[in-house]
Length: 456
Image (cartoon, rainbow, N blue to C red):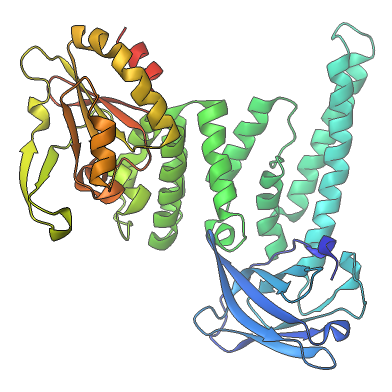
């Protein structure tokens, strides 16, 4: 099957009786080919069927009972062909059939669906969107080349307004339809940078897409669309890179919490935490942490979700647990002491840097090379350094730490699963916490330049 055949057409349906759900397939030219059927659940691709197309090419796929009646994205893949290929198709919560009598299918019309109208509807919606958006884009490109004082500028401006109105009418034409294609369509539009309205500035486009995600998107539909993670990543990027308003971000987050069940909200909040942590946007995490913690929807606080519970700016820093191994590390014999965060900055110290690192990590090595040259200056400012290593090999830890000019470097040899990494929610390395003299976290950072800027 030609690789260009991956046709993205999805579906979601209505609540139906829990009967066996089947898809009848007819692909006579692909007899003998092995295939997989994949269903989408958030960011997971679940392989539910593996089989071989029988002689004659007619066969039936039955959705496993734990997913039936399934509504959403499916991906049917040919697995034993050098050419690969496959078909992304809708499963509309009911039985349907699809046939292809072509030896080398290359376009949507080569596939014939029965009892499933969403595929054709979605294709027509894509074409109409591209037609209007293409015209608007061409007009906008001309507008960018004209000075506003030019006599032709108002004409092109009027034409752009006409295309905006046409796009609004297009959106309204399918917004009230119950078909899955109508509910999933704007998800695909957002992945292509097109929202529910046409705008000629990036900020206006971003604002429209953010509004669409928070106010209009059906998250049950999104969960089975195959674009769960990409939409969440886009939403985080829009807010942190374009709109840059933490209050608006928290308000949108709260709207999404209200329209999602426990399973979806736990997954959603975890994905958001992952992307915000990766970007170092701890102020945004702090802004939504109350919504997460008060929701009573979180199934488990683990992985990225721990960032909502621990070590946020403005909160009391966790105490540091010091494990000293006795004898052979493999014997797991140790004694434990606790360094309380309220005592980090005792004596002449006014602030503390708690640094989580790992030997051999590129960014960590850059930081550890920069720190010694800045240590005396930090010391003069009353800053204490406490370094926590993720090294699991004792000798590697000792070799790297022996030349540090500060005295407080600790390692429990449990890697990033160690108690201090978990308590501080230090998912990646390096991670730096700036803590005041009372043990309150002032900031969470990833590099020395950020630290030096804050200490000016």
